[in-house]
Length: 469
Image 1 (cartoon, rainbow, N blue to C red):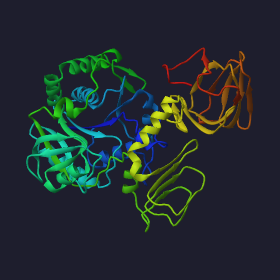
Image 2 (image 1 turned 180 degrees about the vertical axis):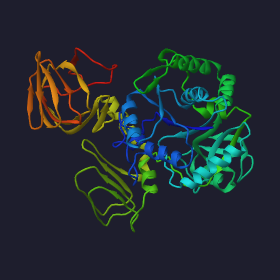
Image 3 (image 1 turned 90 degrees about the vertical axis):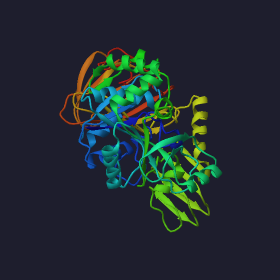
Image 4 (image 1 turned 135 degrees about the vertical axis):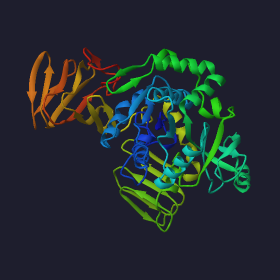
C-alpha cells in the first residue's frame, strides 16, 4: 500500500507578509485555486487514486489550523505533531513508524505540503510507474528543469530520461553552474518528493544516523493521543539531530534512485515564483484583489483589502495586508526573510501573528488594531468555551452577532443572545461558553493602556497550554 505523507512544518518566511509563523505558507491561498496549498496537496493525492488515509506531520502551533482545513475538505488524515522543529529526516521517520503500524509492507509517498502541481494526471502516472518499478529502492523524484534555476538543489543521475541510480546531490548553484546542469541533461531539480518502503528507510536511517533513529523511535513509541492528534514524545524527539532526508540517508545510501518528473511543479517559495505560476495579463502582470494598473509591467500585486494603484513601474512585487505592506523588486524575492529577521530582532509581532488564528474552541480574526484598542471577530463552536480569565490593563466590550452565549462575569452567570452586549472592565473575572447549537459569533472591542496577548491570567482551562487565549 502507498500511504501519502505530507510534511507541513515549514514557516514560509520568504512569503511574508501573507505567510506568518502562526499561519504559514501551506495554510494560505497563494494561487488562483479556491484552496490552500495543503488542501491542494490533499486533493491531489485523493484524486490521483491514493486512497490510504494520509499522514500529516506538522508543528504543534498549527494543529487546529491544519485540522480545520482537512475538515473543510471532508477528508480524513492522521496528524502527528512534532514536539520541535527538526528538519525532514526526523519528520519522515515519525511517519514511517506510523505507516508500519498499519502494514509491514507500507510504502510512504513523501510530499511537501506547500508545493504546487496542477497536472494531476502526470503526477499520478509518475508515482504509479515509480511504485511498479522501484524494487525495494528509495526513490527521489527529480523535476526535469525548464530553465537554469539557482534557487533549487539538483540531483545528478547516472543516466538521463529514465529511472536511474543517483550520482550525487548538489546544493543551489550559481547561474553558470545551473546553465551547465541544464545543458548536460542528467541533472534534475530536487523536488523534496520521495517514495520509500517505510521499513527500508528506517533501516538505512538506523545504519547512517543511529542516534537520530533511536531518538525518534523512542519518541514515537511514547506517543499519546490528544483530541484528534498524535503527539510524539517530546523529550526523546528533541534529542534528534536537525537534519534533512537527503543528508541523513539519500546522499549515503546505495539504494537511492531518481525518478524523472516532467509535469508542472513549483515550490512557490518566493513572490517571484508565485508570479511565475499564475496567469499573467498582456504586460506580464498578476493581480489579486482590488488593483488598478497604468503603464505597469511584469509585476505581482496582491491586495487583501484596500485599492492598490501602480503607475510606471516594472518588475515589482507588492503585497498588502491589514498590518503590513511589502514593496520590492522581484529579483530580490529571496531577501524577504531578512525583513522577517529584522521584525524578530525588534520583538515585533507582524512576522508571527496572522489576521486570522484558530483555537480548539473556534477562531479569531483581528479586524483593526491600534495603540490602545483592538477589534476582533470571534467565532466559538457549539460547546466551545474560553477559559475563566482576567485582564489587568484592558477592558473588553462584546456584542453578540448570532448564537447563544453563557457568560460568567464577576461570579455570576448570564445568558446573552443576538444584539445583546457585555461590558467587561479590567479586573473582572470572566469566561464565555457557546451553549447553543450553532456557531456563536461575537464582535470584541478591547481598549486599554496595554493591548497584547500577555495581559491574561487564566484560572481554568479545559485545554492544553497554548490552546486558549
